[in-house]
Image (cartoon, rainbow, N blue to C red):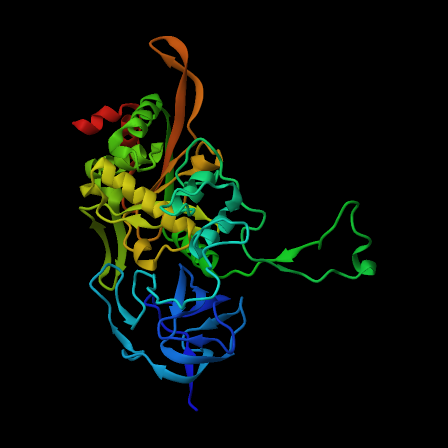
Length: 441
């Protein structure tokens, strides 16, 4: 009888640790090569790990919720035969953010698996709702009751779009409503209640502990380190401008009614994204980067736009980017934004999708905010914030009229770009939101 030990692999992200989120097997289960064993969470994504062995599950060596280092043993498989491809590192396919990865794990962060047949179809619940496990997880993350969602799939199953459409926070780029988050945003570890004699009796109406401790790990750990590094290395300067975005709202309404965009979600962020791309080409220094090298500092000006979108997800802040966005049609850009949103909401944004960004948009309007002073994403020189779009009194041709008004603000690395350049850039973005027809020039 042979026992094989499966160690936590390097999933191609260049990270050193991961958290065991949920085991998909238990001791005594029979598994085939590529059956999913466990779901792990790295600092940037959720990943399913398939089994490199066939056999019987012996022991789960790490409990759910525990963070371990790459290379640590996580499970044993008895009488296991290894997969035909050895579990060794091999060059990844040519792609941005590539590198050496373990066979069976790619930089895309998705694992294609061959699942075992089970007696009960896991797609159908006792309530009669037809939905695949990933869709159920998405619904849980968004606080969606699947029994209230009408399935539009071929067999009546609930699809990803059905869930996203039902959720009030269906999009990270919705401008009118503020997303409704679940009660628990991140996993917390309550502190044991203090002795009554130490703190006195609980306050009237109190039902829980006096405080709790939230471990800093995963996305929060990476985000905090990046923000500190950016705030204390790049001298931030912020400018902003109020904008009459009524014509943008009219264009969005027309696009939603257009057959060409019938299967794509359209929002004001689409016009904002196009405006930022256009303005960055007119003021290239906002799309540049400050680089410290052994021979001194230099400024790298990029003649392409990898457009980052700051996405607030239940797992925390991630900033995936759309590669070569300057080459996309309006429809292609809309499709890319939709894909980015859905992937972020499911926690499936890969490290490659977050690397090599050149400029970022943060849509604080989804939280009801008018303006802010966003922190620049490391490796970039500018970040633009789109505020909420609300009806306000606005002077038009000497008369006060109700108009859709927003505020565009932006923070910039003053080592790279001066006040005139950053002001010209924000003015250009504002001009597009005021008159989207300028994009046709």
